[in-house]
Image (tube, rainbow, N blue to C red; front, side, top):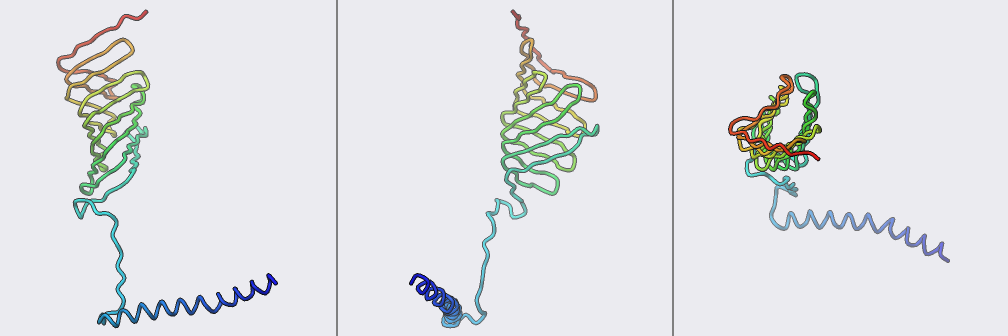
Length: 195
């Protein structure tokens, strides 16, 4: 008995579905001609959300990779990016990682910034944190990073912590090729006594 019911359902669907599809096509075409649209059926596609500028491209979770002049890798990631022009990209919630050989790995984080993809220069601003795997921490408001030349520098107020104490200054410069970590202008050093 169940076999008989199943075969009736299959037969009904075999003939019923094509009839329903033909009816839907006929209704669509009929509605087109009844509304006076002689151009036929128009199908439109919605564009993805556009940014404020028609020429700008918006990217979610972009990931930039490259090599320094000494063939050491660097990466830059962000939550969101907006392409300003062919070479420049504005970034938000940025994380960067660069290996400066003798000075170790540096990990940079900031709320805002921009990268020039042609020159591999990164500008970070709005609460910038720099951490090194050798124990340094630097906090400032604006930093420039030349990934190719392996240089990190800034001319804004800097608060740094190291294993021996803390440093404050009005700028800093880190260069891997020259093996330099320098603080500039109005430098104050506090050396903490170790037990």
